[in-house]
Amino acid sequence: MRTLVQPGQALQPRRLLEWAAPAGDLRVCLAGGQDLLRGLVSALAERDVAHAAVQVVAAEIDRMAYLTGAEDPSGERVATYGPPTWLEGPVTLLGANGILGPGPDGDTLLHCHAVVVDAAGRLHGGHLPPGDCLLGAGGAVALATPLREAVFAASYDSETNYPLFQPTRLPA
Image 1 (spheres, rainbow, N blue to C red):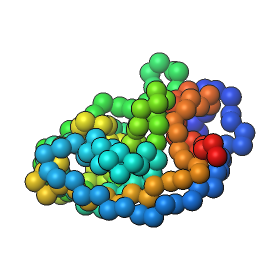
Image 2 (tube, rainbow, N blue to C red):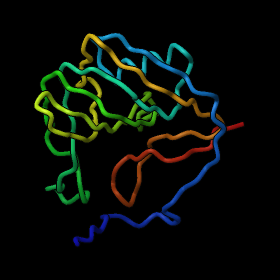
Image 3 (cartoon, one colour):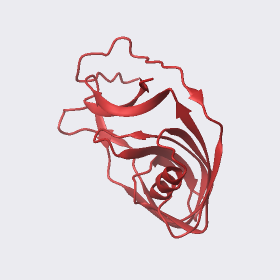
Image 4 (spheres, one colour):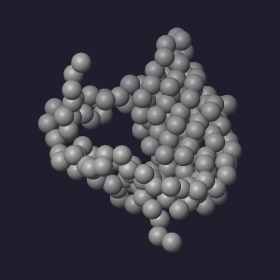
């Protein structure tokens, strides 16, 4: 087994916890022809939701890319994203989970990982980059649980040298 050592000072405690009250689940249906992540961010913004846990339960995908981890050749981090793997449809989503919240620049970000089956029946999985998951005619269905009181916000993590989603208490 290989042990990975992060480049920065270890955050203590490493596990961060904030209690948040869910605000009930929302069902979101997206029409085909749009990007999965951008479509979800837009549909949730229309419902005034900027912070949520998101589960994509069904999607028909015409074309998509996903990213997996790779060793960071610069040495600035233990790992970074490798080059995208592109899949041509039909691609069937088996499941996806994401966190909706503010990114490091303050813009709303949906960080999402998915497991899919390609047209040849092969299993794939990884991080979905925004703008690279075109929905087919069947669209997508997602469940979103808006968060209140405490949310996830991406901020710089000194241990990993990456911006990571971290639980954050909202001001009263």
